Image (cartoon, rainbow, N blue to C red; front, side, top):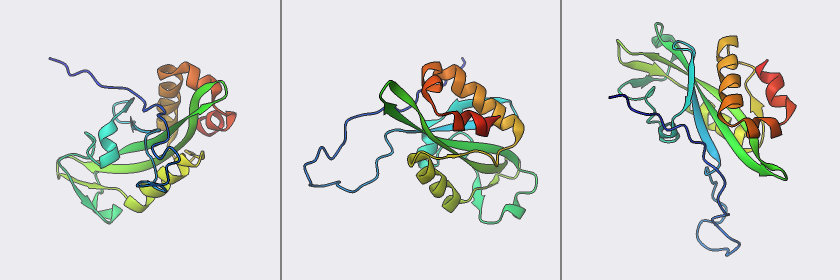
Length: 166
């Protein structure tokens, strides 16, 4: 039986602090961010919310190495941190930043740079698009996914997003 993928972007909720000034004030909310996995090997892109906790299908059952050179036969994947924000006309893709992961399944090892992932998450939350370092196929897959998944979000997004993906 085929398992259905949950392709749902996290959409805005009210401010958790609500101006009360108590517990949680100043904390960063990741409620508006969703990780999109781009797999150029299988030519697909999909949302995997488990990536928020480093538990995506791509990241499971592998040991992460600190040096990229140790994962020489790794397959390339991208986790694109996509932030959605509500504009005057409705929600749109506010920020997006891609972080690479190399996975060598047969040897059960992988590489990712945690500082890079954190930096890209922050850039996405600040409304930046950091996608120009992706390979052309992966950009095309992400472009198609964002356009098709929520066309209304895409139509409201700044042209800078489209420029970086083309």
